[in-house]
Image 1 (tube, rainbow, N blue to C red):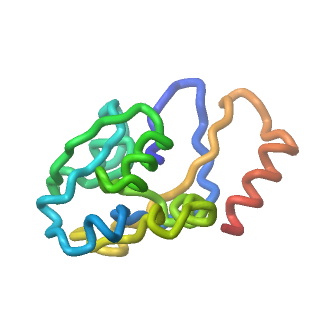
Image 2 (cartoon, rainbow, N blue to C red):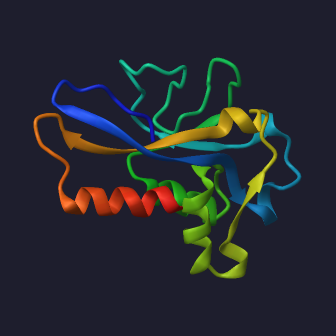
Amino acid sequence: YIPVAHKDIQHVEVGKVKMGVFGNAHRFSQLEFGKLPFVVPVHPLEGVPTKAMGLDGWPESRHPRHVQFRVTALESALTLCREGFAVAYLPGAIVELVNETAKTEKKIVELACPVKIKDRIQPIYMLKRKNEEASKLHKSISQILRRL
């Protein structure tokens, strides 16, 4: 979710998304924040113009968390959350899509989060090569994302 600078890539902001801490309600709804087992992207960020330290955009310097799992794919993180092994910092829109097809006991819900709501709003970017004009497909996808 965080733009990583690259000399040949342009990041085009197409919208904003609200982030939150999500996990299996049956397992984590009563657990205090410091004890929540987070799953995070395996690769730390380098060279980004934000205070976020992980690819998920979590403000680690202001709100340390207990990281128990590191994954390379979003689907792996979602599986750990659905199965009740971990919680993750995720975009609410993604969670809504995941929950549409999940069984009731596998749905993930938003949990208490120490990060202020205004600080959990993150931009969404589309990427394109700097030397190319935006294609019709790029423009169509951008318009759809702006409506979400």
